[in-house]
Length: 288
Image 1 (tube, rainbow, N blue to C red):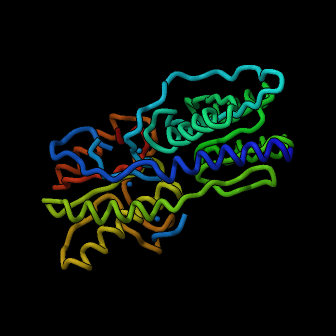
Image 2: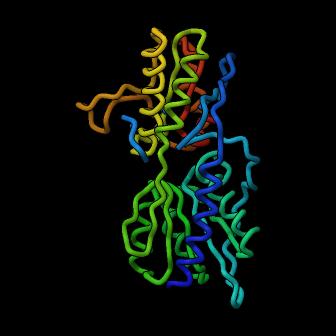
Image 3: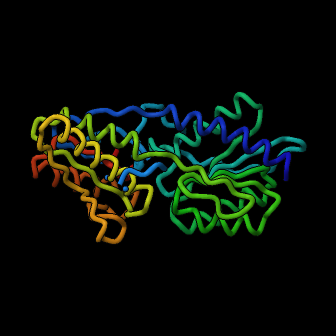
């Protein structure tokens, strides 16, 4: 367990370096098109765009192959590490893709072998983790808040295999939670959006109302508020309003999924109709 954990920690250092360096804020186009939304709390993502978390955060890195790579039997003596995506897929331009980029860098720099399994639906989480375990992988990285239960169960049942999970705190002695202060870049995205808006209205929306998504949206909202405070402006934010009296810290616009591009287009068109000219989606592929 100790040697396996040291290998996983080294790979995670690569992954965290890639995530920390990925993605910069970009303005959204003016034309209505398919597009892709926590109080700032130190804890994914994207720049304002009319086309990630984000979901989280859109990046300009080339997407890895979208085809699923099946877990192969571990060769004698080889160190193999697996990544299980959430339903956003490996090429979500968000945390799944960034995590995979880190895994690939670890393979290149450390000589380990890496594979990923894409989850098409939430029932795939346990199955995909189990496939890596069955093939004797040295460690497993799961990506996303929604994989928390499956990761915890697998870690408890396999205490000798180190796990890491993105966007969720540690739950067992054998799993490491990887959390990021996503409200901070989102704050800057909100400030920049307010400065660039020509209509005085900017927008955000999320995939599912879960803490990591809300954290992005709150950071964006507070960035706009700070711009208004410092510049005597009155830029409006549609799609999220922080309210401590509301469950989840506020109320906003959510598609209810991280997969439907049609939902993303519909939300964007409605926002455009309300005068919004910059949209900050936090919904993974929904916002592409």
